[in-house]
Length: 171
Image 1 (tube, rainbow, N blue to C red):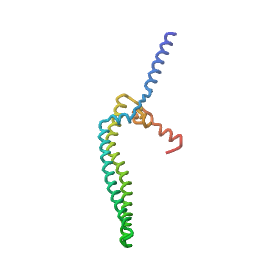
Image 2: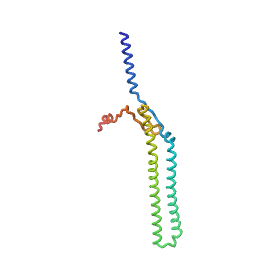
Image 3: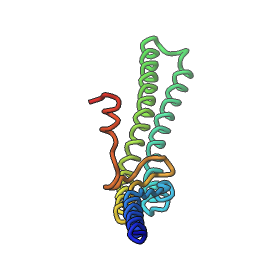
Image 4: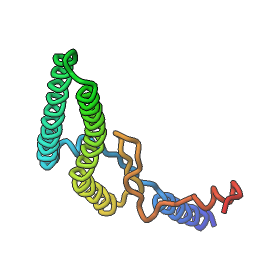
């Protein structure tokens, strides 16, 4: 009888241990900044962005040069200008100021859009590699240590959103 009890306990222990291992989470972490900085495409993207930024700066410098020339001309000839010419020159200067401000704002937006456009394929490539590594190596979760963002959720992960909604009486 003692032998049967020991065998039963051993069998139960093996089954219990196996079920614990089956439920074990496998969590990995990655530094996405390090990965991104090592990608050969990143250097090409940075060079393209620098070139684009130079184009925007060149245009802005040209506009600023035009503005400074108009202001200097206005100040130099103010004493001899008729009211009509003075008003016309002031309007030109004001319009140019507005164009410069608009250009600066639009350039910032356009540069941001260009950055997103160029980086998106690289980010997607890294995301896919992370997903593939997660699936191939049975990771439940992969967390980005650079940002704290969850990058991969395995098939055996539990989504407790519904449970929390019930707990909070949400639909």
